[in-house]
Image (cartoon, rainbow, N blue to C red; front, top):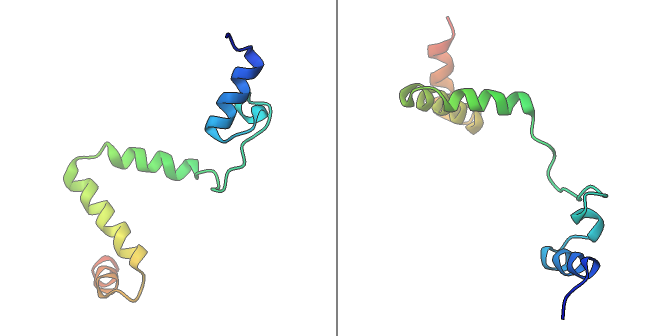
Length: 83
């Protein structure tokens, strides 16, 4: 038994748990996540191309700020960074 194109589309859509419209690109998929900030993505790509030591230093700095002002390392970093 050979499936028609329509039947194949329905089966694939069911397997992927999307609508046939989404599968065919006629309807945007319902994304629960916002689109990434492209400026941030470009910066991260530049960071990836840095030598390992520089990359680690930048990521350590970012991690320190993400921990916030409750972290002792945050205040130590600010003391060292500010004149």
